[in-house]
Length: 289
Image (cartoon, rainbow, N blue to C red; front, side, top):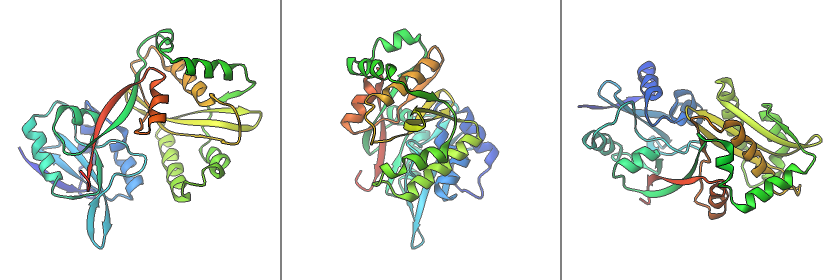
């Protein structure tokens, strides 16, 4: 049993990708191309034996010192494995990881529930879609049902066309609190995910005016709500709830999970849970942990 620290340039990309693709706790966030874009290829990997398990570690360099930092738009990383690893194997990887200077690093839900990790719990909301829509929607809270009925009566147009730069351009001015660099990073990431054929976009319009839009990414059996944006100047309350409802209808009765990329913000978590989503925990660790 051996753990090696492998730089990005020395990584066996085929073995890494094969391990990740076959992993029982797969996340698209750990794909080579995904991490390369978000970190400018500044990441390394801990590898157990001959790629039995992999643990990608993104970092930023400060005066030549590598500091582990979780990238934007990358909720969960951690250790990925195609078959369950033992407590001893996990501890071996984890002990190597803890030798780094860690600002922030998020383990995936499976790691967080199976093993002991020093850190803080964070919330994620998940909705199982493997039943009929009628069964799922029956669990919607009263306010969500009311929102959906309200929007259904409006003369709005639903689009499933991918229009990343156009959407961001239309909405950008409503998000003065978001840096231009973050919008650019999101746009580049969405374009790359679209190239990989792993992106879905749902949008609502009034005539030609965008009301709101949601971007979902495919992560095997997870459909992750990566980003949602809206025009704050309109008064179409419940528009985003309607979008989510359409998505749920179209993906019900499939072996899929809608991953809301949950929130510690009470209002957001409450909104996600109002669709019948359940809260799952994952651990974040870093300077304050």
